[in-house]
Image (cartoon, rainbow over all chains, first blue to last red; front, top):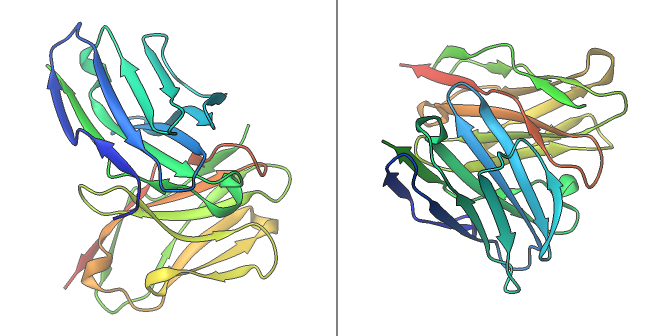
Length: 114
Length: 113
């Protein structure tokens, strides 16, 4: 157990729908990162939050949004889902010096859009 | 922008043989470098990291990696591979202390008996 909790583990939904993925960071970590992993694109950085505020943005679609709450858990919202959004979505967390010590990853949420 | 290249998509190694997985990065200064391992159905686990000091770093599970500035490389090695090492390995780079990590596309390690 890495200490980063992601729910749900699996999600199957239809095109056009909206889903919410949840992440609880490791105790003491202030930063949360979301990554999308697909066979063709590999691991793509989506967005980072630090202590409730957006810190960095990567290749995140406008249909996707995220937030980090006061208790530091984070949610990734995916809307108007398309078949191509099927992927493994990882959450990772780190303390303030994330790059120096690396990230701790959760086990991921596998999203299947049908 | 920082980038990472893992030239080998798949590598097959016999159990007990040595292993070297290649990683090349593109960044002017010395970046923060990492190797992660992902077993099927699992998240990524940090094997080792480098950002300064001794260019040969030791990690968990008997892995080591060597930073070579002249070659912009950070190759992962293990002297004797075990069947349980079969997994996908990712190299990652962070340009600065507070930048996000960029990952390579991964190398799948297969271990033959």
